[in-house]
Length: 202
Length: 202
DNA sequence: AAGGAGTGACTAAGCGCTTGCTTATCGCTA
DNA sequence: TAGCGATAAGCAAGCGCTTAGTCACTCCTT
Image (cartoon, rainbow over all chains, first blue to last red; front, side, top):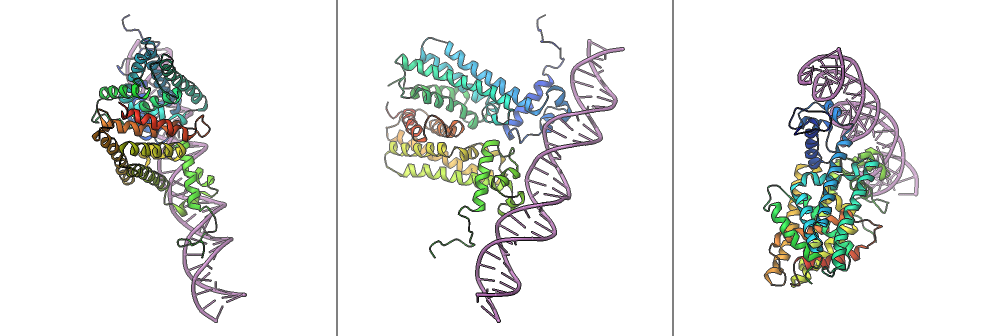
């Protein structure tokens, strides 16, 4: 069984669920959750309006799935960065590179992840907020570890960590696929900026 | 005539137009343009739904007025920063302090200014985009002037200017009025970060 | 034969905005 | 200064339309 699938089998290389998610990501990013109709999503996925409800219970569930998996990826990137080395500077560089690259390359879904929180249901919103707190914590720990080790120099590690996250998050807002820099170039530059921000070279 | 008024006289200290703008700012910031109904706005301003149209032609016009004046203020702050001194470092500090303070203290309207562009009409969107380009230019000029004068050190002034703007813009996203830092403290810290980012102390 | 994927027609609710009207306030005339 | 016409602000009601979501049904694969 070289290609085991979870429970049901589907013949298409891209499942209907995936196509709906992809269509929702594009629409939500371009026009916002409330600016997007279920017909926008369904027709972009090549289906009738009713087909959406075969696969998802509501428009909000689509948003939740997108938001949830985006946040999971983001947290994983930071954790992998922190676990990549014992040296805080290496940890910071790995975390910033992962975070930055994700927000540039995946700017479409990253916009939803960061700007559509208020459209989530109350329960989902709380769940996502908890992940976001963990994300902030993770970045803060890296900065604090560097300060404790004497390799970083900043008077306010907590605010500095937020500033580092801000750089990445806002990238999703202004990054364009046809822009003048690749996500690689941006990540390189942002790694340099991160070192300056934490005062790695006093 | 100790209190001359433009054309018509109104008895209220805060005009109906102003109350509608204030209500729209709150609603748009909290739920987005498309998530806000004209009834939300009108009732928050203490009026019937129809009264909105006595003062504004459409819901979009409210958004445009908010966006336009927010962008005008932002550009003015950067220009005042650039004009405040001949020393690029002083210019940078004044610009960053103004920009940061505005995005913290005025985070509610700043959210609309930065995140609701796609809800504008095509004509208004183009008009606003032009202002945004000028804003980017202004910050870039300050950084380039510093590099030319040999007091800043960065391999990519254009991207560095965008990063400086990103810090301020994203502040509007995460800043809370009841947060642990005042806008004053944040501005101080962000001025220090700005100096590090542009490499003012090599 | 069975069951999931997908559909067209539908509904109830809510949307932006308009209409027809009342009220309050002003400048002007007598 | 009393009364009048003009004008703008405001409201109750509601119009025409769009929305998210439903349902009875038909395909299609196994």
